[in-house]
Image 1 (tube, helix red, strand yellow):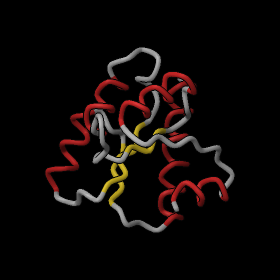
Image 2 (cartoon, rainbow, N blue to C red):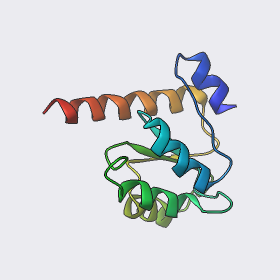
Image 3 (cartoon, one colour):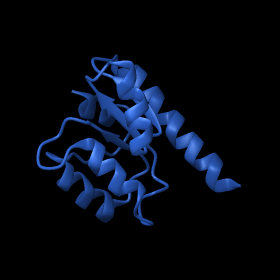
Length: 113
């Protein structure tokens, strides 16, 4: 549902079924923003984010944790893994679009310096 709404809002979207596929696609496509579910099969989103942030090709890409993990400690854990923002599911699609726009603006502002 979120992917369809992001596409409807004008974004190009690529989806991955698991953490390893997310890494592979990120290295291939070098997206503007990555929305990372933290509960993924094969390789969880925590580890996938750590690897993305540890790789020169993808470390500057903003990663937004999009997850059903709503406990306070999970926000801290997501930040430690390298997530740049944290959105708890379910969320309104417009709120997610706003977060994606913020991440793109932040990234563009950082690269302009």
